[in-house]
Amino acid sequence: MADNPLPPPDYELAERRTLTTPSQVQALSNPLRTAILGLLHERAASVSELATAVGRPRSTVAHHVRVLADAGLLRVVRTRRVRAIEERFYGRTARMFVVSVERDDDGELPVDFNDFEVAARESADAFRSGQLWAFLRHARIPQERATEFWERLAGLVREFDELPRSGDTVYGFAAGIYPTDHPRLADPGGERS
Image (tube, rainbow, N blue to C red):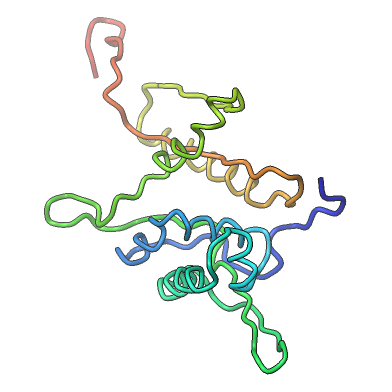
């Protein structure tokens, strides 16, 4: 475990950014790119540092960093001179990205992007080893209450994002609220509303 945890990250960034274009959402749909964004919650990093952290070739990581930068999700936050080369350090443009993309004429989202699908894949090994902590609950509530609850969850996500980085294990944190077709009881008096 690290003795001196650092407050994340070591550069200025917006609290929240709304992604409104299919290219921005598509940039997030690649697991390597989401890993890069996750690493940059800790601190700014060069392409070489990112390549070492994810165990991929520098050229591959450079391509994915370019995709993220072109989509406006990353930016150069500082540079340093190393011999005759200027080394760039990249950082996120926001702590949290919120997807708000218009559906196409068929009502479909432009790409397959579902954080719970990612969390399900990532959590499989933790489940098998007895290290998955999760809850799933259902409640019949009005839309306004669901929105209020989501805002409270978003605050908890922000708190998780801002934790000082230390330790040897990277934990995932998934939160969501969504409508279901879960069965419900009739209202007292026999009517369903």
